[in-house]
Length: 385
Image (cartoon, rainbow, N blue to C red; front, side):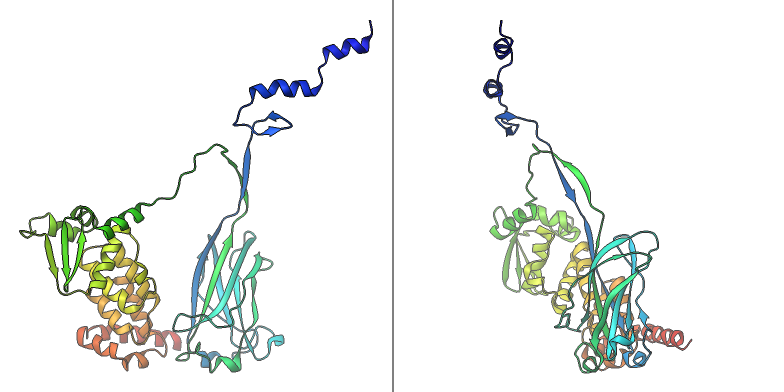
């Protein structure tokens, strides 16, 4: 018998095996050369943490001429579990940057390498960054390379007449992203995709459509329809007003004559969605002040704290007086301290005293002046020491 011909009967060619397997294909497996194989997947994940730190340099005229290589430093702040600081060199960090101020980001850790990207820019009193925005810097920080930044951060001759030097003060904004080490994780190939929550959208539509509403508010003549149960769950004041012993007979329409319709509308929007409406996204001081009063009145604490934070971020000479009065009247301790700290900061007391807001402060809360002067005196004593 011919061995070669005998072997051809025992060993089938690959095409026959593939054809046989075609009848048993599983759609869950990909096809490779006609065969279905098990499928796995993985993904490389690189996470990051981003934060902003504002470093306010007061008394610029006093540190100009400090000398090349000498600096003033921000306090140490933490981003991504790592400590950082911003250093400003009013006369430049080296002789190569003559006529320029320098600014650097310093890594205060001494344990590991940290990858980061950041910007350092001058911040105007209107909240805008300098027109020539410094591009992102990328650097791997380590104990051996613990600083990176801009040698020619700002021309000193232009800085004196720029809008970023106001009342002898300038602010450097550091936008910092700390990048974690990449890691790989398995991906479930057949996992069910879950869409993001639309709860806030659904409740916003419920408010806007008014379907099923059972109470109406007349705010300075403008009507707003709402749902008692939603209001009661989100506000203890509304709960008492609509369901408690203090509820009025026939509360189908409740009149509110001491609040602007736009403010009440924003309050309702937050109650239903837990978000500020687009009309409040610009963060204007007057809007946030009125909304803080409304939030405190109806016991919507999260909204009150959001307003408190927004106001503390936008304190200015013209607004600090009225903001401080609100903080005092509505027990906003953090906002109160931020306002007092602003007024007591070097070279700020004079301009604030001349503002209309300060006159309102003196008429409404005259005792606060004693606390402000006490803080100013302590700062002067610390500086003289």
